[in-house]
Length: 202
Image (cartoon, rainbow, N blue to C red; front, side):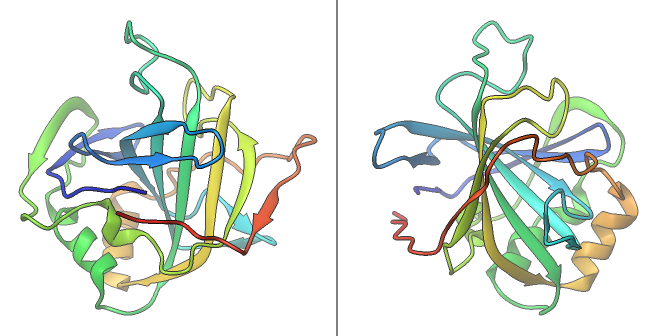
């Protein structure tokens, strides 16, 4: 994983905050040698995913693609990609994950709009701030949780649930509550679990 510092560009699509980052952040799969660029992040309250039926207070999804954008009308659009999901529960009021959200949540646009808003966040801000310390994860083949809901997406859901200030979660929940796709059946998909993870970050 190489997540660089970035500016913060925000818009709201379907009642969901969408954050876009500067170029320079990517993930690389060791076996396939694929390098996928981080394209955007969405924030959901409550969580999209559940563990054994447990719903969490918030979930953030980082979307990565080999090429192109997530917009099907874009001439460079290529289906599929890899989504990395991070779960949050109300907890501590300190830590880098709190600093990450505090930098922009009070300036998020509330109304839907395609135009991105540039939010000042400081020189050390970036997606690395919300990556959990423990890298064990669940993996399954899935689809996008928003239209066009296309297949051919790989999902990595980190097992570690991070604590986040109740003020942050409540602020996001008030403005964007229940912006999730209903839980879907596995439909023959078999999730895998990886607890022996060596995930280099640079």
